[in-house]
Structure formats: structure tokens, C-alpha cells
Length: 393
Ligand SMILES: Cc1cc2nc3c(=O)[nH]c(=O)nc-3n(C[C@H](O)[C@H](O)[C@H](O)COP(=O)(O)OP(=O)(O)OC[C@H]3O[C@@H](n4cnc5c(N)ncnc54)[C@H](O)[C@@H]3O)c2cc1C
Image 1 (cartoon, rainbow, N blue to C red):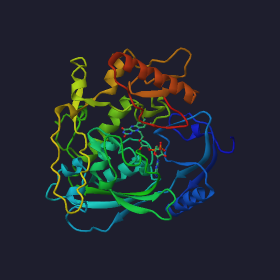
Image 2: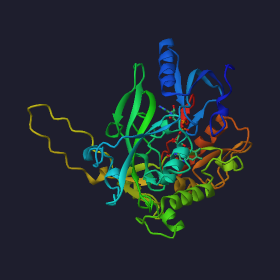
Image 3: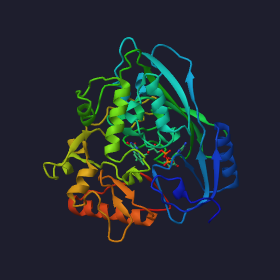
Image 4: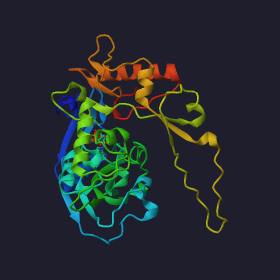
């Protein structure tokens, strides 16, 4: 398979062999046409944005890669002064958003290939708040709902209104409201198997007016770096700058001069375990209570409404820190297996990095080692955050 440049040239971890074919789609129409062509030909396929959340096999991909390069931000006409997201449809974070009396809402529709951080920079410059804490995340806007990106106390779900989505083998995209996307901690219906292509993403932001205050700070370390308290509001540009500085200190901003940024971001998600299990961990293990989404209860027409069952406290869930578990299992920053060119970042335990010329297999070996160490020490199985193409750990 040598017909296209190796995918290592298109992934931030710089690993991956060639694909059989690659199509660059520079407009929404080209994206839809490319997909329909590939589906008609019966090829295997996947969508590539910025390649910042995937690990591709050294053997490459025996199918067609559709690359999203469509750009553009369109300001949509205001619908009403009320939020266009019905209250029942909003993700929890959205319901908690603070709205000052003088703030107007702005709705925008962004093309899938638009670089994410260029979008954030543009919204911050215009004084539109809602995405500022997500500054510095690499990749394309179309990928942002796939794992419901989040950082520094903000999640995409709190500003996302809808996506335009071309279901696999469909003729045209449909608009899917955020409430139907199953958005959760680093997940969505797209990670659970709904195949297709996000062609555009719609957001609702706050026009923060002349003071241009960002959304309330939701992350202690960020508050500290701004000399503020959790829940305080600071100018939106100051918040972006502080996030970028913190991210740089952790190698979490792509930087040609920083080898620690040659990664796929956090390699493992924070595990979510039962409260009972969490109690078995050492006292100093960080843990945060979290909710498990209540499944929908379907009541057949004509029957009595179903009373939600009482929940056993054993069902309550606790989120753990993957970084803490890895460090306390004895895997230190900068660690690498003998002879391997893959290493734990020297700035951030959760990032697996390519120190130069590493193969995907070396990264995967390191990931397996980390996972085995944590499992042996604490009995917790870590799950990879990036999408693995042609690989498993
Ligand atoms: C240094 C660094 C820091 C990071 N920090 C964070 C962080 O703080 N928070 C966070 O959440 N993530 C973070 N990430 C992970 C990553 O940047 C995000 O998940 C980002 O949204 C991925 O975008 P992408 O365009 O690079 O996706 P890709 O890697 O190209 O694709 C990822 C997955 O999404 C699919 N996909 C991409 N575009 C589309 C589309 N238009 N339609 C359908 N499917 C699509 C791909 O097929 C693949 O399965 C970080 C990564 C790096 C390298």
C-alpha cells in the first residue's frame, strides 16, 4: 500500500502507514460527494480531521480516507431572544450556564474541516463566550462532537446546538440536535457506533458585550493561575491566554519545538467505577462523584406510567484520575520501555509521545505496559481515549 503518503504525515502522533486512497474534501458538497462515491464503490473508509485523536497501524489502512478540509464560520440569523435549545434538550452543563442580563446569544454554523483552535480564537476575538476554555485543543471542528471534547471545566456539550450529519449510505446530511447525540464524558453516539460524517457543527455562544467576560471558571488550577476563584468570571481573552499557558506547560499544545506535544493528547480516559470499588483505593487517590445517565424508560401507549426504580447506592459512580493511577503504579513521566522510541511525556503522565521515528507498535506496547501496571496495582482497566485504526491494545 504505497499509493498515498503515510498517515504518519497527517497524525499528531506521527505514526501510521499509507491508506489505499485519500480524498481531500474542501467544501461541504465535496465531502458529501466523496462519501457517496466511496460508499457506492463499497470501500472501507474513515474520516480524517486533524489526526490528533487517532493511532493508525504501521500497516496503514486498506480503504479510503476522506479528509475534511472545508472551512468557514457562518453567523446564523437570531431565532428568538430565548435559547434555541429547548430546556429539556440541553446537556446538564448547558443548563447551568450563567446568562447576564445584557448578554445576547449568537448562533454560528461551522464547517467540519475548520481548525478548532482557529474557531476558538475567532470567537474570543469577537467577544463570544462559550468555547474559551477549550482553547489550544488540536484538530478540526467536525471531530469536536465525536468525543465531546472537554478541558479546564468546559465541555463542547455546553455550547453545541446541533450537527449536520451524513449517515453512512444516506444521500444527504440531516440536522441532529445535541440532545440526540448521547454526549457524555469523552463520548457520543458516534463513538458508540453511529457511522457517518459530521459535515457542519452549530453552536450557541454568548455575545459577552463590551466587558467580554468568559463563562464562569470551572477548574481550580485555571482559577489559581488567574488569581481568581472557582465560579469567577474574567475577560474572555485572559481566560484563553491562561488556558494556553497551562496547556503549554503540560506539552498539550502542538508545538514543533516541543517533543512532548508529539502525542494524541491524553491516551487514557479517567476510569469511572462503582462507589464501592472506589472505597478500596488508597485514601489519597483523587475521586469525583459522577452521575450515570438514567436509561430512558419506555412506557407502552395506554399503560400506567412507570415509576423510576430506586437506585442502589452501589450504582453510584466515581470518576478516578488515570494520571494518578499510572504514577502510583510506578510509571513515571519520561518513562520508556528499553529500546523503544515511544515514551510517557516528560510533562504529563497521560500523554504517550513519539520521541522520533517511533512506530505505532511501539506506542501500543507502551500503552499495554501502562495498562498492565495499573491493572496489577489497582485492579482498574484503563481505556484508550484515541481511536485505534487497525490496532488494539
Ligand atoms: C496535544 C493534544 C492535546 C489534546 N487535548 C485535548 C483536550 O484537552 N480535550 C479533548 O477532549 N481532546 C484533546 N485532544 C484530542 C483531540 O485533539 C480531540 O479529540 C479533537 O477533537 C480531535 O480532532 P481531529 O480533527 O484531530 O480528529 P481526528 O483525530 O482526525 O479523528 C478522531 C476521530 O473522529 C472521527 N472524525 C473526525 N472528523 C470527523 C467528522 N467530520 N465526522 C465524523 N467523524 C469524524 C475520525 O474518523 C476518528 O474516529 C488533544 C490531542 C492532542 C494531540
